Length: 226
Ligand code: IPE
Ligand code: IPE
Ligand code: MG
Image 1 (cartoon, rainbow, N blue to C red):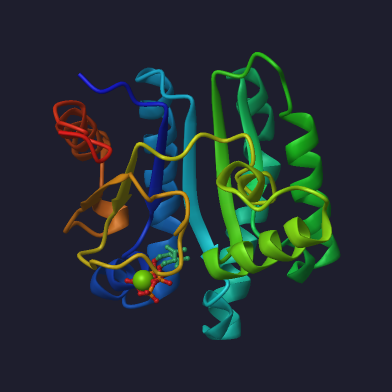
Image 2: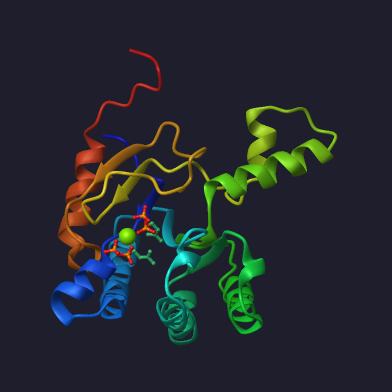
């Protein structure tokens, strides 16, 4: 059985779900947040240490302003309302992505959430990928590495990624019946097993999640060997 230390998820399909059931995309984002809560609970139950959630990509700025505003409103509400619950359950929040683009208010909330949930004995670390783009992350890392006196090698490049000190994901799940990576963790998933799920994110549940985890546990991982 393969152990699982890190699960990464591309939570896709909110907009289509919203249009299908409520005639607007934003209600899909709201419903998707309930799935986030379910998945966090199950991740803790399964004793998995890291969960990375693709929440907003560098390309998502191309969406209509009302949708972007709604997404950040949801995020702010979540951070405000759930912070104590996270602390109580020993869940650490870390943001991966470029924080510079956020409003002062959002940035403050994110900084406070990261600070308040920082603990040495956390049971789970959630990495929220926000304004995250793998290509930006790599360019940034290469720039900083070349400014440093360090040799250019895998280990040193990884020091400059947002995911520094976070082990690579064991598996990546993408919901929403779309088989692409959309600029997510391109370096980090070199040997990650990828699972594409047909269900839209708001329809994904603990049972679907557990099924994928169990499927992964039974895989033969070669890492180039035989
Ligand atoms: C993913 O769902 C959530 C975010 C990108 C924030 P989408 O909003 O992309 O949903 P679809 O793919 O349009 O259905
Ligand atoms: C990826 O989904 C980003 C997030 C889930 C946050 P998108 O819906 O933005 O991806 P594309 O545009 O379909 O590739
Ligand atoms: Mg999408």
